[in-house]
Image (tube, helix red, strand yellow):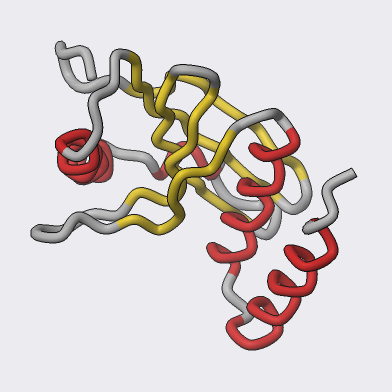
Length: 135
């Protein structure tokens, strides 16, 4: 059992109460899901020092660096959340990921998408690659 779990839940509850933000709630759920799945979280909401873009979650799965984009919907009434990762979003994520990679030497990296609808979590591993390039 993780001794910090109650503190995470309390921090999440306070943040949700204050912000009532669906996206933030989804990122908190994804963070918890990844930790339970054995990932080591390196960063959340990381922004490059210069330029646009944001990486929702950066984590390690073994020796692989994983950039995770989190998409959240409160209900299944609209399109699937993962459908909102379009070409423009992918380019912004790639720019941010390249900036992050400049600071660390990594052999393996990938992009994942976590789609959350209500309380259902779907994890799409290796969901997008740098167009024609290896990370």
